[in-house]
Every structure is written in structure tokens, then in C-alpha cells.
Image 1 (cartoon, rainbow over the protein chains, first blue to last red):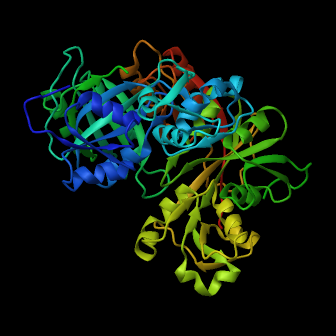
Image 2 (tube, chains in turn green, purple):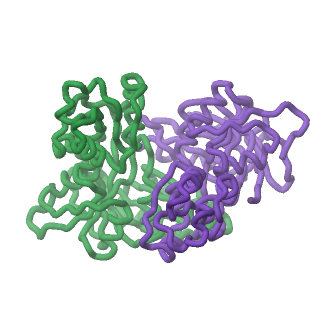
Image 3 (cartoon, each protein chain N blue to C red):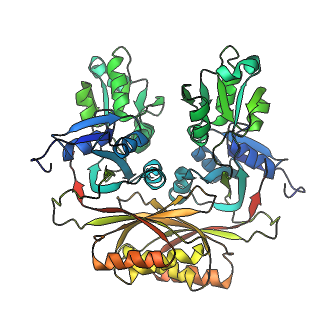
Length: 292
Length: 292
């Protein structure tokens, strides 16, 4: 929870209410106006078009990897800044309609987002191997569907907030296969400001999007990493995404554990440009770790 | 088309018939027995369990990027080799039931795989902005659905082979937004053999999956690239994927334009292991470029 003494922000997030993005947003901005959007581009366009002050979108999951749509949209379509990063543990629970609470072991269908179904693969395989799985657009949408069909003996997989919102019985907690699962979210703004640092243990992080010079790509990535390595600037992540100009053309997203305003980072960015790279900084930001 | 004088292979591919993977497989193996599977893990498991000789799966699209499921399954679940790579141009066409051929401009719904819908985004936006889009599990499944509903004025988006198979009228050819779009496919086998080189212009390519030493990750990727750079071994691709041991832990998939049996590559792989990296080679293979 940050910055009490100000006008409430209008914040677009990947909905519906009770989605994991909702939890990430509500935890950081409990007193602000949260506006659910149905898609990631919808969230990003809302802040780019000044319809809202901020947007919160998922960036990366520990099991599924990056969310390509978020990275591609930030690179190709808009000029926005990351002003904060939220880390949220992901816990998936099995929930049924209150009317079916006594019969939950006889469920005839399980509803959830494809990623949530994948995250509970082993549980479902060993416990409900013959029960058909149905994909929904979000875990919250699955919970809503189950709440609206009390006559059906079916279950949803989702977070505890969805169970509460749709008054479902949470019959099997924590059925996800990997206990360390987390998702990272970006808080996006049109201005390159910075949400305040709440925990001094967390270093500032800068995200750069780098396009290599076209004539000499194969050795260029090594050169790019050399620029950071000799300065002892630590990379916490590097990822490639298609430039959409042809197969084999990529841009790179690099997370560096340093502030873009330090002399070392300024020098690194200048050198990258001198090497012929195109460098787009998404800004420097701090991490907010949330619990469920 | 390769190796006529042999027993036909049994080949699992990502179906259904008339999918893009089917076209990639049929072009390279016209006389073999093609067995459609409903999922990528289904294809990979079929060859791992000796139910088939080979499997063909999509690896990377020029617009959408890598297929995470293929990379993750090859790293985490099985020990298979890449024995060939197929490059297929992707063209998307608008097709309707023959019964609706005269009314195609009044379609009330468009069906296709989410990637195909995305690849035709601009066309659909300018031409059919108010027509609802419906997602299907594949472009071929969309064509099948349209063929089975002659009374509905709806269209599918897919390849020409799907139009032919389901006897649909191809009313608007090549409606995809980007003309250079291609998809790469891997031909997988349990044995580290190699499909023959058909075009001597194409260099051999080796794919390595590299896990960095746990104690020193931030500088280690730079060291890894140095191993290739000073040997002038050209990387055509580098990609990171989650190790699934915690957020921030990745393995890297590297494509190198060289044969794994050359002294330079042998030296590079030995040095990587000496640096504490875990190196898994998927083998060396040749490219097959296909036309539609």
C-alpha cells in the first residue's frame, strides 16, 4: 500500500475481478479505482490513450515463462514506462458450488484457465484422471460459471479471492504441482516516474529493449553483454522476441539490477548506441513482494 | 522429398489433416504414414514411446515467436534429437461453405485458431470490424466446422489445403497482414541420425540447451557467449525459458550454424561443461525450405 495522500489513481488491470492481476493490483493500490479490462492490449491502450493513470498487466510466470503479448505490445505499439513491479505467489484451489459441497469428489467437469489447469496437471491426473477439463478465459470466469450452475456437479480451479467473491466452497486448497510458483506484474504509466521504494533490500531494476545492428548480429549479442559484464552490471533476465520483420530477426529484453541514472548505466547505454544498437529503456523501478 | 528406397516411416504430427504441420510433414515425407495427434506432447510422447519413428512439431513462428510447449517438453520431459528442420511460408485465406459462396461478404462470424486470427488482424479490422471472431483449436478445425454448417453464413481462415479437403470456396486469398510470415518445424527422432542435406547452400545447424552454473548466473551468460564468439561460431538464435525451479531461473536454447562434430564445436561444448554449465545437444540437422 503506497502513497496515501494523493488523488486516487484510475487503474486498468487484466480482469475480471478476483483474477490474479486483480490481487496484485488491489494489494498495491487498495484505495484506488480499479477498472477491469478483458485483454492485455486493452489495459495497455487504456493508459496510452490517457483513459486511466496506470495499468497493471502480467509479465512473467515462473512455470509458463514470459507473457509474449505484454512484451510485444510494449515494444511494437506504445511508449510507456514501468514504474513498479509486483511479485505475487500463485496458489490454485479446487472449489465447487455450495449446493454440491457434499458431492465434490464426484465432480464431472473441471473449469479453469489453460495455465491453471496445466499448473495442477499432476493433481488432476492422479485424482480426477477421467474427468473432462474445460478451458475458460480466466480462473475468475471459471468460478463465476460454477456459481451460476448449482445443479451441475462441477469444479473450478482458481484463487481464494474468486471462491469468496462467487461464494464457492473451497474443497481442496493448494492443488498446484509446484509450490514456488510466482507471477510478475508490471505497473505501467505514460510518465517515467517511479513508485517509492518500500523495502530497502530490493535493488532498483531497469528494463531495456535492445535491437542489434542488422549487419552483424551473431557476434553483436556477445558485444552487448560485454558492455554490461565489464561494468559488473548484473543481468537478472534476458529474453528474445521476434522483430516481426522476418524469421531470425529478434529484439532482446534485458533486466539489469541497477538504476538507469547511475554513471555506469548511462555509459552502458551510450556504448550500446555507439555499437549500432537501438536501445529503448522502460525505466527503473522497485519490486513489491505480495503475499496471498 | 527424401530417401525413397526404404521402409515407410510412421510419423506423428500435430493434426488434424490439412493443418500447417501436416503441410510441412507431407512435403518432406510424401510417401510415409502420417498419424495426426491432437497435441504437441502427444506427438513427442509418441516418438519417445516408440509408437512412431518420427514426430513433426511446430517450433517457432516469425510473428508469434517460439512455441514454448515444444521447447519445454524437449528440455524437461524427453531425450530426443532433431534430425531435420522444415521452413514453411504461412498464408492465410478466407473460405466459406460452397452454399454461402454468393453471400460471403455478409458473413456473420469468422472461425480460426487464435494465431491465425491475430495474423489477419488488420484485414479483419478494416473489412469485417463488426463480425464476431470465434477461436478454434486449429485452422483445419475451423474449416471442418464451416463445412459442417452450410446453413450458416460464416467463414474460416486457414490454408488452401484445408479449403480443398473440406470443399470450401476460397473467397479471399492471402489475407494475412505480414507477407514474410514463416513457421519452423522440428523433425524429432529417438536416434541421433540426420536427414540428408538436400541443398548445399544450407549450413548445418546445431541446437544446444544450456543451463548456467547456479552460483554465478549474471556473468555466466556472457562467458557462454564468449566460448562461441572467439571461435567465430555464429549463433542464429538464443532464447531463455524457465527452469521451473523458481522465478529468475532459466535455461537457454542456442542455435549455432555449425556441425556438432567439428573440432571447434567439440571444444566449445567441453569448455561450457568446464565452466559448470549443463549442456544438452539436440543434434545437428539441415534445413528444408518448402513452398506452398
